[in-house]
Length: 147
Image (spheres, rainbow, N blue to C red):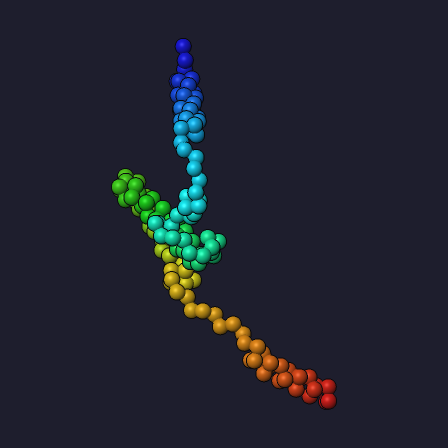
């Protein structure tokens, strides 16, 4: 007689076998006629323009990660809101501390400027400005040498 774990193991073996059989059957049944159109990158029905190796703005990833972090934290508030009364003041205090840390994290991200989509562009140094400053340094050196 099988134990409960034995039944689960047999179920997992059968599931894996079903997947392998389905993949093998699909390989034998499907037509294999690649064309130039089928090999192109699909972009929502539009014809692709340019190379697919385009550098994306890192802001997309930063905003997505910030959303994910704060979204998960807010999801954790729902169970707390339902049962914090059962734990009395301690449960309430833990929730308030959690909200305080969440608020501090949001304030940090806001202060850092990660919540702003368009940051002001840094002004790169211009060669003309650097050359104008260089004679001033030479004049100071000459004054030190002459004294």
